Image (cartoon, rainbow over all chains, first blue to last red; front, side, top):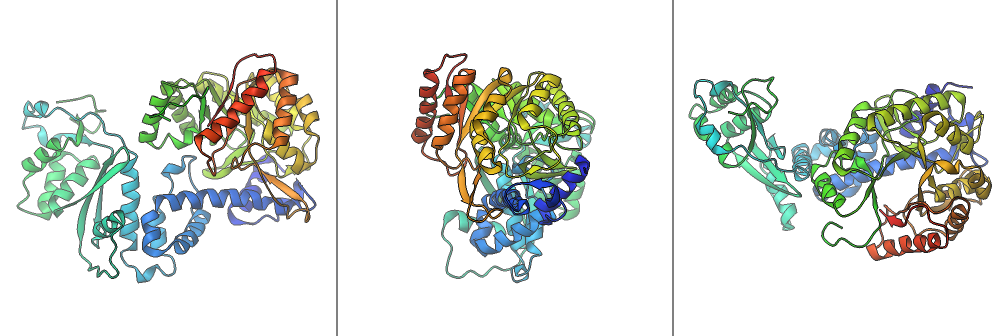
Length: 264
Length: 268
């Protein structure tokens, strides 16, 4: 009698890889139990492929559902979910899709699918209470460069090689022209959303760099330095004021170790 | 549901649909102000040969703290191999090794949640030649070792009995009735059984109305054990809400003819 861990290893190979031979001899179910394993394999595949199709409707619109389904089937075999919350599954799919056969004709596919993924992520976020702008007015300017901010969870930043946000807006507006010439151009996109909605905002490179760095946990000083590297005319004070005015800031930390309660 | 608050005794949710979706979780908290909620997990995987996912378990505890569920339940199954989630409820051999493992995992779940966990009998398509006890005896032993409660899915009994060739009434007779806290009824979908050409295998899809054989076994089960809170599982190919509520009302009608312990049927 094989140990449970061995049985589950064989079962896993039957479900994910379709290799049902090794587990079949210990099974009961109909005259040929090996055939019944196809039910579990189908449950695995159908559930995950459907989940990916639901997350990438605009990508299906762009390249056609059959191509997305085929890519999704390959993806779930090579990258099984790492956790039971399927809402979190699929972050690596845009990159995978862009490397599938047939995708080489669509050099903007990766950026487009990535943008759609990010839009889906911010749309399920909820806004937290923003920090009162009055509190910033009391800040010690000397220590401000060492401050780190927590931004709303419904914010993502995408540096794309194609103006894919225009393409996504066409999908959303259901106004796709018969022909569209997409010209490669580096764009810096802020994806902002909450409670079922999202917006796509194109930023200049310095503002994008600043906001992205802040969202990733850099100090204001570090974020400003990188933004200035991108554009020597960047104004950190104005950029900070815009974050506050947009109600993006939900917590202020004096050091990396502070856990949100060290308000100014 | 949040906007219209239709009449329903209670609702059941899969926490995995809410843990990574703050917007949905927010709506669920609103819903919990108007309905008792039961939490039915699909990702705890008490049957995994490895350890259970403690991070996932803690997230479920966090959700439970927010919505104060009437029940927290899961399955006699496994769905995680090492760090891979297999997105299905997979069968277990019923042996002493499995018993020790499942009991230890249920202890851990109950300790983390700080409440009894309900274990549901599975819908089976295959079982294991080397099982040393039947499913009802296995469940009885699990209850004895852990103090957990049971979720008796009557439709799963109908499905498993058809697929594996046993008597569903005998299964109910053997079921450890004292531990039943909840019941499920769900639709199944017959299809050609490739394992036995010319026969059907029944798939637990939750995508159809409750079959007459499930209603009949439900009535038999209630006559034996008394009425229990009962849920209509219909979460694929969703019908209209009135159609779903009609199924729940029919379950209530059957239960009304039985001496009541608790209450009524509902739907998710």
